[in-house]
Amino acid sequence: AKPRVIFSGIQPTGIPHLGNYLGAIQNWVRLQNRAAPDDTILYCIVGYHAITLPQDPAHLETERLNMLASLLACGINPKTSLLFNQDQVPEHAELAWILNCITPMGWLSRMTTWKSKLAVARNASSEDEINDSMLNLGLFAYPVLQAADIMIHKSTHVPVGEDQTQHLELAQDIARAFNHKYSDDLFPTPQQLSTPTKRVLSLRDPTQKMSKSAPSDKSRILITDDPAAITAKIRGAVTDSISEITYHPERRPGVSNLISILAACTSEEPNLDLGTIARSYQGKRIQDLKQDVADAVIAKIEPIRKEYEKIRAESAWLRDVSDAGDTLARERASRTMSEVKKTVGL
Ligand code: ADP
Ligand code: NA
Image 1 (cartoon, helix red, strand yellow):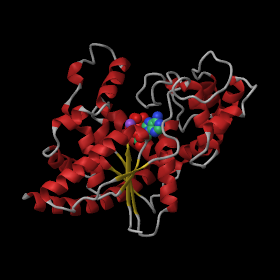
Image 2 (image 1 turned 45 degrees about the vertical axis):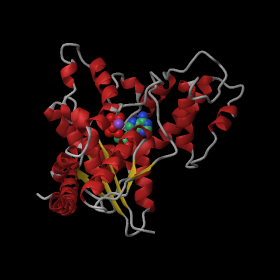
Image 3 (image 1 turned 30 degrees about the horizontal axis):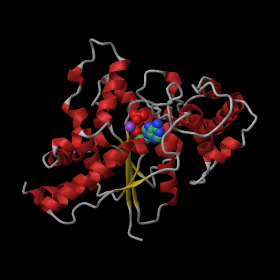
Image 4 (image 1 turned 45 degrees about the horizontal axis):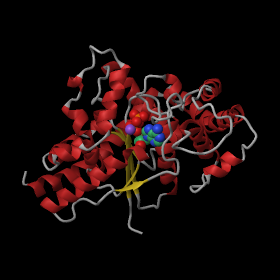
């Protein structure tokens, strides 16, 4: 098989939640551990994306270390994967500018994520602080920066959650547009690598995805939550008034989300039938299901939480790891950037 270049990123905007873990990071770790010797694996913390919404500078710096520690605690091995900070590799932003110049505004208008991010941000803060001027150019154009993140490393495979499908398709369109305009084969068309767990939903509002930016802490489980916190959040998960347990994501998103989390935490089987799991709860109560979900999530998260506590205390080592990654990523990115500038005539 042709060597793959696997790439993904995560924002340093809070400790990863169960959705990030089951929908993305767990898959990053599996890909890393199963990679062929000549595959290249790059995972980064995307600070340039974080500042598309307001951030407190002092806080942001801490968040970047928290995220680095989180990824290491989840099993990313900096000896196998190139783990780095996107914002320390200026070529990401430089390529984004060139891609901005070939991306029609209409392609970005069709994206749904900036609209929902804006809506979440509006609810989270006071009215005076947030108004229409919050739609800055960066938030509107961040899918182009994502395309640049992927393309600057000539990535072929991108493991991200289902919430990112639209952006990945945009990145494919932009890569094709660049090749068409300037050169036939400079950029590969990146393929999405999905996980069996498509989308983990908010525990408070199961019509929304679990998200770092939603206002309620009770809506998400963090990889640093202790067993008591996990149990409390799962017990408090919003379901519905039907006592029978059935799997029906459209009609019963709350219960179905719990079944999906249970499956994801207890099995690696990609084609597990969630209806079968639901039927195994025939005659049981929602409290029974919640107890099993809590136990399964705790079994998954507790080793990660403990590892995080250990690693996070090693600030000097964390900085060494990220400095080494930044240097290597920059070498790689600057090679692509030279080719791009030459191709464009700059
Ligand atoms: P968030 O949306 O919580 O701010 P990011 O945008 O940093 O998180 O996303 C990091 C990764 O986690 C992406 O691959 C994204 O697809 C995945 N992801 C985020 N939320 C969920 C979710 N609720 N379910 C599954 N995957 C998710
Ligand atoms: Na996201």
